[in-house]
Image (cartoon, rainbow, N blue to C red):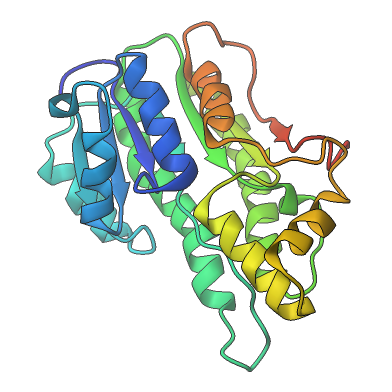
Length: 254
């Protein structure tokens, strides 16, 4: 894949990752779709403009060798951009089926692994500026009971974002993080269901309570996140780096 505008999108099999892939394909970028579920990746590819232009890679971002081997097999020459979107959600509880390591290893370490394995390909690209976009969360800035691993993993991504933005300036690689609030994805719907079960209320009531902390009283659509990502990746953007950008309907105003 010699095209100088090739973009790798992780977690592309569903939700925000799929929406980002769909938006970027409309802008004529050839994409590499990465995730753990090959079938979901193929569903995403089939939903894109010119599906034959895009590739799917099934691998586990917790394993650096898995990422390295997958990229080598695809004989990729260079990457113009990386969208590090892959992640998992849910609660964790100490000593009781604790998911701390699973969540941290995927969301934080997995993102770190992905970026490091992609850096040689980004550095080889001849574009004036290359781009990395990291998907964090409004919960990088807020605390939620029972979500210590998720909050810590997303807060860690903001530290990673700042450090890499400084480190990679000499390579003309711009690094930014997005902090979405509620976005209407399956992960968000699962969160609402869990919230409803915990409080023994309906899912509709759970939604109303969740929106009490959101001034605009709504979720974002995945394509809103995708359009913002598309701008950050575009040639029009050459001045934003090291930033954590909030898209949360007013839920957090730092």
